[in-house]
Image (cartoon, rainbow, N blue to C red):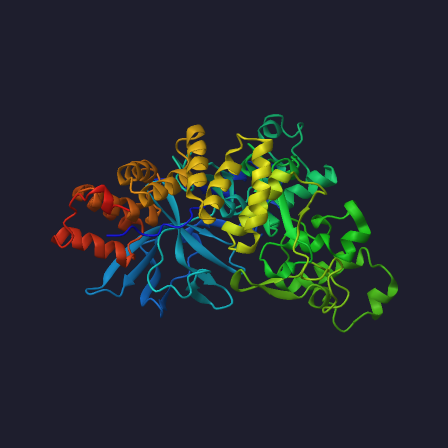
Length: 547
């Protein structure tokens, strides 16, 4: 019985019975003195970036034709519920208690549920343009119910407040609430307010507009910037970023020279920085020249609201009375809505602010110049650039960048042999290169420093199994699966190894755990059925057969 191909593993909460409160409760103390701002802010997309599921529920159903799975979002006695029916014989029906929604609803939203400390996404999302449900990106052609979908930490960071770090050695396990507040709280932009409250306002909070341009813009960029890829600095976590910090101290962001920034959903900062308005105005201009985070103008007010922002700079009489006076909506021509390739069914505002809709980008260069450059800062470390190219290889599948990533990672290791992120990347890249010997050594170096490392433990187990050392592989996988039970490939490989080692009960238990989080995996259900009916006896095999 061959092992599943687990592939190269890449790293990208949950309350048991409690749920996080939302910004209405978190920001209530601010409302005592700033009532008008508080009440207007509660109506903004930022304040409503997430919340309790039953507060923003769109009941509905959706049948996914390629898989035959029927999904339903329902309200059962005030409890938001996701139910799905698998097209098996007989049909399997499963339901999950939804805890949170994620998304302001302007473009759409998704729902989250938790299991034993893991925070998971619904496989379907609500799209406002469709007025209904469809599969999440990447699963439109899935032939079965997708496996457990772990929530990307960057989604938590930019839709929730006071986000906690995952348990070491996991990418999705939390010992308590994964975040304190749903929605974006006042403190997310103004910093810790305890001293401000204790002094009755005499001790100021952070005012982003009074910060240096770099720190001011960091407040927006931490969530409104994606780039082609980004890298956390050595021993830094972006979760530690606080208002008043410089984002460049935590992260490096990279883009390909001349890349079309409208292809990505989160690219407003990149687009804005390339606009003639920003280039001409320099550091004095920021997002907040046009956007007031405390106010979201009503639909009937939007045209006048943003036209006023434009005329604050373009004050010549020709713009006020002659320039398309019949159509005062400046943004419809200069900032049109455009689709994002990485998220279907949605349209985003083009922040390049071009003079003419078809005007080429100011920084456009021939497409053959495929070089990553840092944004937000003119310089970035060679270590970060190496990991940026590595991310493009492993996360985005750009295999042509593998030789460059490898050479740069080797150089980064020479400069700092103890950099775990570099060692881990070298192990994965070596494995992609077919160099299992060096890959093992890199994984062992990582595990020596951090024995709980998820990627190193998982991938080293795969290499050990391939070489015939199934017992060592099973030991590593079991240790890793113990706190990463939501990763189905890991559990399926562990179960197969346990069966081949004659550990039938352990293999069955592992597969039942896999199906707890990923009930739609037909291969796992089939393997478990074979073990239970005896058609797969799970007899220990000679080591020569374990390769």
